[in-house]
Amino acid sequence: MDLGNFSELRDKKILITGGAGFIGSNLCEALLQLEANVTCLDNFATGHRYNIAPFLSNKNFQLIEGDIRDLKTCQTACRNQDFVLHQAALGSVPRSINDPITSNEVNVGGFLNMLVAARDSGIKRFIYAASSSTYGDSESLPKVEDKIGKPLSPYAITKYVNELYADIFHTTYCLDSIGLRYFNVFGRRQDPNGAYAAVIPLFVKQFMAHESPVINGDGSYSRDFTYIDNVVQMNLLAITTKNEYALNQIYNTAVGDRTTLVQLTSLLKKHLSAFDEKIREVEVIHGPNRKGDIPHSLASIEKAEQLLNYAPTHTIDSGIEEAIKWYWMNLRK
Image 1 (tube, helix red, strand yellow):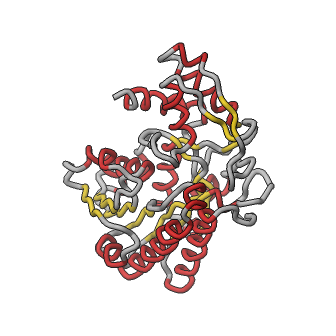
Image 2: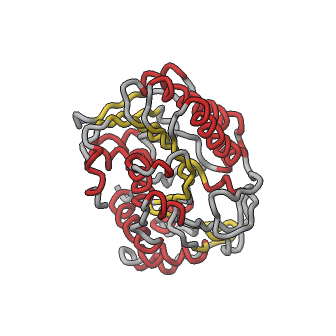
Protein backbone atom coordinates (compact mmCIF):
# COMPACT_ATOMS: atom_id res chain seq x y z
CA MET A 1 0.00 0.00 0.00
CA ASP A 2 1.05 3.62 -0.53
CA LEU A 3 2.35 5.04 2.74
CA GLY A 4 3.51 8.34 1.29
CA ASN A 5 0.88 10.40 3.10
CA PHE A 6 2.03 9.25 6.53
CA SER A 7 5.72 10.23 6.52
CA GLU A 8 5.14 12.38 9.63
CA LEU A 9 5.10 9.16 11.67
CA ARG A 10 8.82 8.71 11.21
CA ASP A 11 10.55 8.48 14.64
CA LYS A 12 7.21 8.50 16.47
CA LYS A 13 6.92 5.98 19.31
CA ILE A 14 3.92 3.73 18.80
CA LEU A 15 2.74 0.84 20.98
CA ILE A 16 0.75 -1.89 19.24
CA THR A 17 -1.00 -4.30 21.58
CA GLY A 18 -1.68 -7.66 19.97
CA GLY A 19 1.11 -6.77 17.56
CA ALA A 20 1.85 -10.43 16.75
CA GLY A 21 -1.71 -11.03 15.58
CA PHE A 22 -3.19 -10.73 12.11
CA ILE A 23 -4.06 -7.03 12.11
CA GLY A 24 -1.41 -6.04 14.64
CA SER A 25 1.48 -7.51 12.65
CA ASN A 26 0.33 -5.72 9.51
CA LEU A 27 0.30 -2.47 11.47
CA CYS A 28 3.80 -3.22 12.78
CA GLU A 29 5.02 -3.77 9.23
CA ALA A 30 3.50 -0.55 7.87
CA LEU A 31 4.84 1.58 10.70
CA LEU A 32 8.33 0.10 10.45
CA GLN A 33 8.28 0.93 6.75
CA LEU A 34 7.51 4.50 7.82
CA GLU A 35 10.54 4.33 10.18
CA ALA A 36 8.44 4.72 13.31
CA ASN A 37 9.62 3.22 16.59
CA VAL A 38 7.30 0.28 17.18
CA THR A 39 6.74 -1.58 20.44
CA CYS A 40 4.72 -4.80 20.21
CA LEU A 41 2.95 -6.11 23.31
CA ASP A 42 1.62 -9.64 22.96
CA ASN A 43 1.13 -12.75 25.10
CA PHE A 44 0.85 -15.01 22.01
CA ALA A 45 -2.52 -16.40 23.09
CA THR A 46 -3.81 -15.91 19.55
CA GLY A 47 -0.89 -14.11 17.86
CA HIS A 48 2.14 -15.91 16.42
CA ARG A 49 5.87 -15.35 16.71
CA TYR A 50 6.33 -16.03 13.00
CA ASN A 51 4.18 -12.97 12.23
CA ILE A 52 6.78 -10.68 13.78
CA ALA A 53 9.91 -12.75 13.09
CA PRO A 54 10.96 -10.49 10.18
CA PHE A 55 10.86 -7.43 12.48
CA LEU A 56 13.00 -8.71 15.35
CA SER A 57 16.23 -7.60 13.71
CA ASN A 58 14.89 -4.09 13.03
CA LYS A 59 16.45 -1.54 15.38
CA ASN A 60 13.13 0.32 15.52
CA PHE A 61 11.21 -2.72 16.80
CA GLN A 62 10.81 -3.86 20.38
CA LEU A 63 8.87 -6.89 21.65
CA ILE A 64 7.34 -7.01 25.12
CA GLU A 65 5.91 -10.42 25.92
CA GLY A 66 3.12 -9.83 28.37
CA ASP A 67 -0.61 -9.85 29.07
CA ILE A 68 -2.90 -6.82 29.06
CA ARG A 69 -4.69 -8.33 32.07
CA ASP A 70 -1.65 -7.25 34.09
CA LEU A 71 -1.72 -3.51 34.80
CA LYS A 72 2.03 -3.25 35.48
CA THR A 73 2.76 -4.78 32.09
CA CYS A 74 0.49 -2.22 30.44
CA GLN A 75 2.18 0.61 32.33
CA THR A 76 5.63 -0.58 31.28
CA ALA A 77 4.54 -0.88 27.65
CA CYS A 78 2.96 2.60 27.56
CA ARG A 79 5.93 4.37 29.11
CA ASN A 80 7.44 7.02 26.77
CA GLN A 81 5.07 6.15 23.91
CA ASP A 82 3.36 8.75 21.71
CA PHE A 83 0.42 6.68 20.47
CA VAL A 84 -1.30 3.39 21.23
CA LEU A 85 -2.91 1.13 18.63
CA HIS A 86 -4.86 -1.28 20.82
CA GLN A 87 -5.57 -4.47 18.86
CA ALA A 88 -5.22 -7.04 21.65
CA ALA A 89 -8.45 -8.93 22.33
CA LEU A 90 -9.99 -12.36 22.33
CA GLY A 91 -12.00 -12.28 19.13
CA SER A 92 -14.73 -14.62 17.90
CA VAL A 93 -18.40 -14.70 18.80
CA PRO A 94 -18.39 -18.52 19.34
CA ARG A 95 -15.35 -18.27 21.63
CA SER A 96 -17.16 -15.74 23.81
CA ILE A 97 -20.25 -17.93 23.96
CA ASN A 98 -18.15 -20.92 25.02
CA ASP A 99 -16.06 -18.94 27.54
CA PRO A 100 -17.59 -15.55 28.39
CA ILE A 101 -15.48 -15.07 31.52
CA THR A 102 -12.11 -15.09 29.76
CA SER A 103 -13.42 -12.94 26.92
CA ASN A 104 -14.59 -10.38 29.46
CA GLU A 105 -11.33 -10.49 31.44
CA VAL A 106 -9.27 -9.77 28.31
CA ASN A 107 -11.59 -7.53 26.32
CA VAL A 108 -12.95 -5.44 29.19
CA GLY A 109 -10.46 -5.81 32.05
CA GLY A 110 -7.47 -5.68 29.73
CA PHE A 111 -8.92 -2.72 27.85
CA LEU A 112 -9.45 -0.81 31.08
CA ASN A 113 -5.86 -1.54 32.13
CA MET A 114 -4.63 -0.12 28.83
CA LEU A 115 -6.74 3.02 29.21
CA VAL A 116 -5.41 3.61 32.72
CA ALA A 117 -1.82 3.04 31.60
CA ALA A 118 -2.30 5.32 28.58
CA ARG A 119 -3.79 8.05 30.76
CA ASP A 120 -1.00 7.84 33.31
CA SER A 121 1.72 7.86 30.62
CA GLY A 122 0.35 10.91 28.82
CA ILE A 123 -0.42 9.07 25.56
CA LYS A 124 -1.37 11.58 22.87
CA ARG A 125 -4.00 9.41 21.22
CA PHE A 126 -5.47 5.97 21.91
CA ILE A 127 -6.72 4.14 18.79
CA TYR A 128 -8.59 0.91 19.46
CA ALA A 129 -10.19 -1.96 17.61
CA ALA A 130 -13.95 -1.82 18.05
CA SER A 131 -16.29 -4.24 16.30
CA SER A 132 -19.25 -4.34 13.93
CA SER A 133 -20.77 -6.89 16.32
CA THR A 134 -21.82 -3.85 18.40
CA TYR A 135 -24.69 -3.29 15.94
CA GLY A 136 -26.32 -6.41 17.38
CA ASP A 137 -29.92 -7.01 16.37
CA SER A 138 -30.30 -3.70 14.54
CA GLU A 139 -31.81 -4.52 11.14
CA SER A 140 -31.12 -1.17 9.51
CA LEU A 141 -28.75 -1.16 6.52
CA PRO A 142 -26.29 0.29 5.96
CA LYS A 143 -24.98 0.39 9.53
CA VAL A 144 -24.51 3.97 10.73
CA GLU A 145 -22.31 4.63 13.74
CA ASP A 146 -24.91 6.26 15.99
CA LYS A 147 -27.61 3.60 15.51
CA ILE A 148 -26.91 0.30 17.25
CA GLY A 149 -29.11 -2.52 18.49
CA LYS A 150 -29.03 -5.02 21.32
CA PRO A 151 -25.81 -7.10 21.47
CA LEU A 152 -26.19 -10.75 20.48
CA SER A 153 -23.12 -12.27 22.14
CA PRO A 154 -20.76 -11.78 25.10
CA TYR A 155 -18.10 -10.66 22.60
CA ALA A 156 -20.36 -7.91 21.26
CA ILE A 157 -21.04 -6.71 24.81
CA THR A 158 -17.31 -6.49 25.57
CA LYS A 159 -16.61 -4.43 22.46
CA TYR A 160 -19.47 -2.04 23.21
CA VAL A 161 -18.20 -1.62 26.78
CA ASN A 162 -14.83 -0.61 25.26
CA GLU A 163 -16.53 2.25 23.44
CA LEU A 164 -18.26 3.39 26.64
CA TYR A 165 -15.02 3.28 28.64
CA ALA A 166 -13.10 5.18 25.95
CA ASP A 167 -15.75 7.91 25.98
CA ILE A 168 -15.64 8.21 29.78
CA PHE A 169 -11.83 8.43 29.76
CA HIS A 170 -12.08 11.34 27.33
CA THR A 171 -14.72 13.27 29.28
CA THR A 172 -13.17 12.50 32.69
CA TYR A 173 -9.41 12.41 31.99
CA CYS A 174 -9.08 14.17 28.59
CA LEU A 175 -7.60 11.06 26.93
CA ASP A 176 -8.23 11.39 23.20
CA SER A 177 -9.28 8.20 21.47
CA ILE A 178 -10.73 6.87 18.22
CA GLY A 179 -12.61 3.58 17.93
CA LEU A 180 -12.59 1.65 14.67
CA ARG A 181 -15.48 -0.77 14.20
CA TYR A 182 -13.90 -3.48 12.08
CA PHE A 183 -16.11 -5.29 9.58
CA ASN A 184 -14.94 -8.85 8.72
CA VAL A 185 -11.30 -8.06 8.06
CA PHE A 186 -9.30 -10.48 5.90
CA GLY A 187 -5.90 -10.69 4.21
CA ARG A 188 -2.30 -11.75 4.63
CA ARG A 189 -1.30 -13.36 7.94
CA GLN A 190 -4.86 -14.22 8.95
CA ASP A 191 -4.65 -17.62 10.63
CA PRO A 192 -6.61 -20.43 8.90
CA ASN A 193 -6.09 -22.85 11.78
CA GLY A 194 -7.86 -23.41 15.08
CA ALA A 195 -11.44 -23.74 16.25
CA TYR A 196 -12.19 -20.03 15.77
CA ALA A 197 -10.59 -19.39 12.39
CA ALA A 198 -12.26 -16.69 10.30
CA VAL A 199 -14.31 -17.80 7.32
CA ILE A 200 -12.04 -16.63 4.47
CA PRO A 201 -8.73 -18.21 5.53
CA LEU A 202 -10.58 -21.34 6.67
CA PHE A 203 -12.35 -21.73 3.32
CA VAL A 204 -9.13 -21.02 1.42
CA LYS A 205 -7.33 -23.73 3.37
CA GLN A 206 -10.13 -26.21 2.73
CA PHE A 207 -10.39 -25.43 -0.99
CA MET A 208 -6.63 -25.81 -1.38
CA ALA A 209 -6.91 -29.26 0.21
CA HIS A 210 -9.88 -30.09 -2.07
CA GLU A 211 -12.12 -30.29 1.01
CA SER A 212 -15.70 -28.99 1.03
CA PRO A 213 -16.17 -25.89 3.20
CA VAL A 214 -19.32 -25.68 5.32
CA ILE A 215 -21.47 -22.58 4.99
CA ASN A 216 -23.60 -21.77 8.03
CA GLY A 217 -27.17 -21.60 6.73
CA ASP A 218 -28.29 -21.26 3.13
CA GLY A 219 -25.47 -18.89 2.18
CA SER A 220 -27.66 -15.81 1.87
CA TYR A 221 -26.13 -14.15 4.95
CA SER A 222 -23.95 -11.25 3.82
CA ARG A 223 -20.95 -9.40 5.20
CA ASP A 224 -18.92 -6.28 4.44
CA PHE A 225 -15.62 -8.11 3.92
CA THR A 226 -12.76 -5.65 4.34
CA TYR A 227 -9.20 -6.14 3.09
CA ILE A 228 -6.37 -5.56 5.56
CA ASP A 229 -4.86 -2.61 3.66
CA ASN A 230 -8.08 -0.64 4.18
CA VAL A 231 -7.82 -1.31 7.92
CA VAL A 232 -4.16 -0.25 8.07
CA GLN A 233 -5.10 2.96 6.27
CA MET A 234 -7.82 3.71 8.82
CA ASN A 235 -5.44 3.23 11.74
CA LEU A 236 -2.84 5.53 10.20
CA LEU A 237 -5.47 8.16 9.43
CA ALA A 238 -6.69 7.94 13.02
CA ILE A 239 -3.18 8.56 14.35
CA THR A 240 -2.38 11.46 12.03
CA THR A 241 -5.65 13.36 11.61
CA LYS A 242 -5.45 17.07 12.42
CA ASN A 243 -9.22 17.40 12.49
CA GLU A 244 -10.25 17.94 16.11
CA TYR A 245 -13.84 16.96 15.25
CA ALA A 246 -12.53 13.56 14.16
CA LEU A 247 -11.28 12.72 17.65
CA ASN A 248 -13.27 10.81 20.28
CA GLN A 249 -15.46 9.28 17.65
CA ILE A 250 -16.37 5.80 16.44
CA TYR A 251 -15.87 4.89 12.77
CA ASN A 252 -16.97 2.00 10.64
CA THR A 253 -13.87 0.41 9.14
CA ALA A 254 -15.11 -1.31 6.03
CA VAL A 255 -15.41 -1.03 2.27
CA GLY A 256 -19.12 -0.17 2.09
CA ASP A 257 -20.28 -3.20 0.10
CA ARG A 258 -21.69 -6.58 1.05
CA THR A 259 -21.10 -10.08 -0.22
CA THR A 260 -23.15 -13.19 0.52
CA LEU A 261 -21.39 -16.36 1.61
CA VAL A 262 -22.40 -18.00 -1.68
CA GLN A 263 -20.84 -15.12 -3.60
CA LEU A 264 -17.75 -15.35 -1.39
CA THR A 265 -17.17 -19.03 -2.17
CA SER A 266 -17.54 -18.28 -5.89
CA LEU A 267 -14.91 -15.54 -5.61
CA LEU A 268 -12.54 -17.81 -3.72
CA LYS A 269 -12.96 -20.55 -6.31
CA LYS A 270 -12.36 -18.10 -9.15
CA HIS A 271 -9.05 -16.83 -7.80
CA LEU A 272 -7.84 -20.16 -6.41
CA SER A 273 -8.55 -22.01 -9.64
CA ALA A 274 -5.95 -19.81 -11.36
CA PHE A 275 -3.45 -21.87 -9.36
CA ASP A 276 -5.32 -25.19 -9.27
CA GLU A 277 -8.11 -25.99 -11.76
CA LYS A 278 -9.42 -28.85 -9.59
CA ILE A 279 -10.71 -26.34 -7.04
CA ARG A 280 -13.52 -25.39 -9.43
CA GLU A 281 -15.05 -28.82 -8.84
CA VAL A 282 -15.00 -28.71 -5.01
CA GLU A 283 -18.57 -28.63 -3.70
CA VAL A 284 -19.80 -26.50 -0.81
CA ILE A 285 -21.76 -28.01 2.09
CA HIS A 286 -24.49 -26.18 4.02
CA GLY A 287 -24.89 -26.53 7.78
CA PRO A 288 -27.06 -24.90 10.48
CA ASN A 289 -26.94 -21.21 11.25
CA ARG A 290 -24.49 -20.21 13.99
CA LYS A 291 -25.59 -18.76 17.34
CA GLY A 292 -24.99 -15.04 17.68
CA ASP A 293 -24.72 -14.42 13.95
CA ILE A 294 -26.60 -11.55 12.36
CA PRO A 295 -28.07 -12.11 8.88
CA HIS A 296 -26.59 -9.08 7.13
CA SER A 297 -23.86 -6.55 7.70
CA LEU A 298 -23.14 -3.53 5.53
CA ALA A 299 -21.31 -0.42 6.69
CA SER A 300 -21.81 3.19 5.84
CA ILE A 301 -18.31 4.63 5.49
CA GLU A 302 -19.51 8.19 4.93
CA LYS A 303 -18.40 9.40 8.36
CA ALA A 304 -14.86 8.07 7.88
CA GLU A 305 -14.72 9.56 4.40
CA GLN A 306 -15.80 12.99 5.66
CA LEU A 307 -13.86 13.28 8.92
CA LEU A 308 -10.77 11.14 8.26
CA ASN A 309 -10.51 11.40 4.45
CA TYR A 310 -10.75 7.61 4.26
CA ALA A 311 -10.66 6.16 0.74
CA PRO A 312 -10.61 2.33 0.66
CA THR A 313 -8.08 1.01 -1.84
CA HIS A 314 -9.41 -2.55 -2.13
CA THR A 315 -12.81 -4.01 -2.99
CA ILE A 316 -13.73 -7.54 -1.97
CA ASP A 317 -12.57 -8.84 -5.38
CA SER A 318 -9.18 -7.11 -5.46
CA GLY A 319 -8.61 -7.93 -1.80
CA ILE A 320 -9.41 -11.62 -2.34
CA GLU A 321 -7.05 -11.69 -5.31
CA GLU A 322 -4.16 -10.35 -3.21
CA ALA A 323 -5.01 -12.54 -0.23
CA ILE A 324 -5.12 -15.69 -2.38
CA LYS A 325 -1.65 -14.97 -3.74
CA TRP A 326 -0.32 -14.71 -0.18
CA TYR A 327 -2.08 -17.87 0.99
CA TRP A 328 -0.93 -19.84 -2.03
CA MET A 329 2.66 -18.90 -1.25
CA ASN A 330 2.42 -19.52 2.49
CA LEU A 331 -0.10 -22.28 3.18
CA ARG A 332 1.72 -24.83 1.04
CA LYS A 333 4.97 -24.54 3.00
